[in-house]
Amino acid sequence: MRATIIVFPGSNCDRDVQVAIASVTGQKPTMVWHRDSDLPNTDLIVLPGGFAHGDYLRCGAIAAHSPIMKDVVRLAEAGTPVLAICNGFQIAIEAGLLPGALIRNANLNFICKPVHLRVENAHTPFTHMYDEDEVIRLPIANHDGNYIADAETLAALTDEARIVFRYCDGAGDVSEAANPNGSVMNIAGIANARRTILGMMPHPERFVDEALGSDDGRSVFGSLMGALS
Image 1 (tube, rainbow, N blue to C red):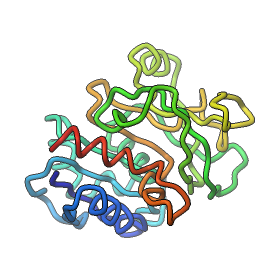
Image 2 (image 1 turned 90 degrees about the horizontal axis):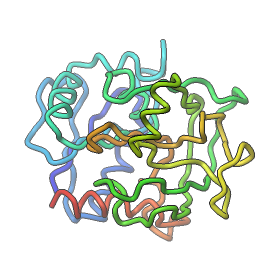
Image 3 (image 1 turned 120 degrees about the horizontal axis):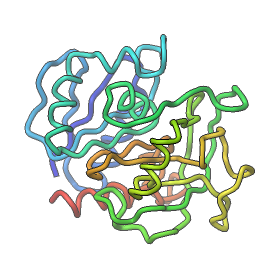
Image 4 (image 1 turned 120 degrees about the vertical axis):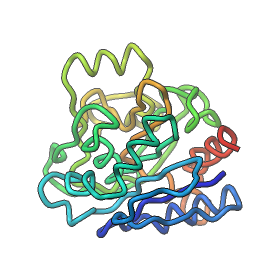
């Protein structure tokens, strides 16, 4: 699986994703600087977490206009899978690859902690190694992780099974108490209509080995390897 990771000024999880993918697939991803204009031949594009351009304006708004994003959007629209994590999720939304918006957390605080997620759709290239309704733990680290969308978008996400992860408690119950940032319907991750783009706020790359506290994120990359190899 040939993976390409886009690096923006302010990215801070690009190396984490590189290590995670190499650990799972045995192949080291290519790192591409945001000012480049062309992507190499690739099976997967990753928009990593961090604080691209210092998160000035809206999070991801400047990064979405980086030169490389024209090629990212071109390939994404042609069907190349894109994994957009945290700040990458924000960039993907700003670039028009995913619907909705990510705004300030409901408590207006930066939140950095492991949370429980329920796998809502285990039939995507990113999640087929999980079970439907499986409860996993992944870390979040965001100040603007509060997902919102209009009623029409939420209906489409629901009807088309495009909500991939929801925040829940350890028993898998979705509730306001289990929602760390106020996201509507406890949404933690969504896909595009073709299931080729996944945007998620939690960080699977931070939990790929028990030595890190858990390997619950490993199946995201394992799923991709199985789907794309």
